[in-house]
Amino acid sequence: MINPKEKKEEQAYKEILDVLKKYREICVYDVNEMEFLAKKHLFGIELKEKYGLNVEPREIRSLDWNRFSDYISLGLWGKKYKRTISCSDDGKQPEDELLLQLSFSTGAYIFGSCSGNDYPTEFFKEFFQELKTYNPKYTDTTNKNLYFSMANASNIFNEFPAILKKYYELNKTDAKERKVKKLKAELDKLQTNI
Image 1 (cartoon, rainbow, N blue to C red):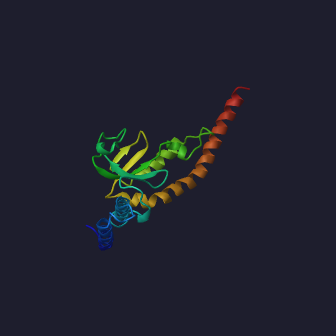
Image 2: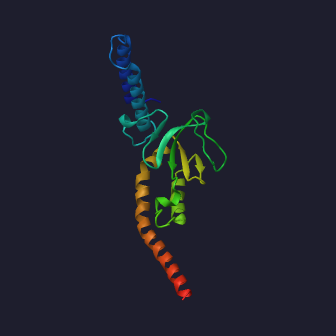
Image 3: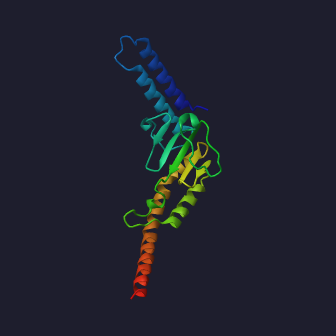
C-alpha cells in the first residue's frame, strides 16, 4: 500500500514530467534522466516509509543495487540480475527478490589484523550468530553473508551500526586477551627450547 506522502510525491513527479515531455522538442532538460532521478527518489521513499529503513530517500543511487556501508548492500537478487548466493546453506536461491545483504568478505579480520596474523574466529562466530537472530531469509555461512527479506530488513538495517560498535568495543578486551594468550604460548615454547 502506498502511503499518502509517497502518492503525493509520485503525483508531483508525474505532473512535472508530463510538462517536460510535452515540450521535449524545445526543452534543454534530459527528460529521461529526470524520470530516472524521480524513480530513485520514490524508491528511497518506499524504503523508508514502507519498509522502515532509516535512509535518506534522496541519497538512493540505483533501483537495483545500493551500497550503504562496507558491510550493507540492498539489491535485486536472482538469475536475471546475475546475483545468486554462492554457497547457500540450504541450497535455496532468491528469484527476483529485493534483499538486504550483510557481507563480511574478510571474515574474522573485521576484528583482527592482517599484519598481526590475528583472525579471531570464535569472536567472529559470536558476532555472526547475533546477526542471525534477526532471521535472514538466506544464509551463506561459508562466505559470511546474510540476506534479509524486506519483511524484516528494517530491524537489522537500523540496529546494525550499534551492534557493530558493541562488538568493536568487546573486541578491545578480547584482542588483548588473544594477544596475552599468544605471547604466553610463545614464551612457553621458548622456555621449552632452552
